Length: 196
Image (cartoon, rainbow, N blue to C red):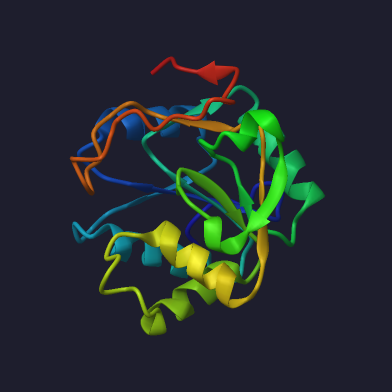
C-alpha cells in the first residue's frame, strides 16, 4: 500500500517532481514515515489523481515536496487531525484572516493551495471519482485546489483552516506555471526546519 499509517489511522502522501531533488531529499529526511509519489507523466493533475487513488478510503495528509515543515510536525498534525478527523483541514494558508481571526472554518468554494491538507476517510476516493464529471477540468487543467473547492461546494461543506500553518511554501519557481510568483508564503508559519 502506498503511504504510511501514522498512528495506524492516517497516510501521508507527498507528490513530487524528480527535478526537485533537494526538496525530495528534505522531505525524506524530515518526514521519513511519508510516501513520496513521483510525477510519472509530466502532468500535475495526473499525479494529483494518482495520489487520490492511492489514498483510497484511508484518512490522508496530502502534501507537495516544495515545502519546509514546522518542528514536531508529526505531533502537531496528529493532534489537529485527532480534533477533527471527519473534516477537511487546510494546513497552509496565506490569508489576511490568518492573523486577524486565526483558525476557523470557511466555505468549501474558497479552498486554495495544496502544499499540505488533510482529507478524512473516503474523501480521496470521492475526489478521484468526482474528477471525470468535473465541469471545469478543461478550464483548470492543473487546478486541483479548484477541483477540491468545487467538490466541497457541491457537497455544501466547509473546511477548517489551521493556524499557524504547519508547512511553509519554498520561494521557488513553479514547475506547473513558471510565471507564478515565488513569493507565496504563509505569514503564520513558525518553528520552521530549514536544514537540508
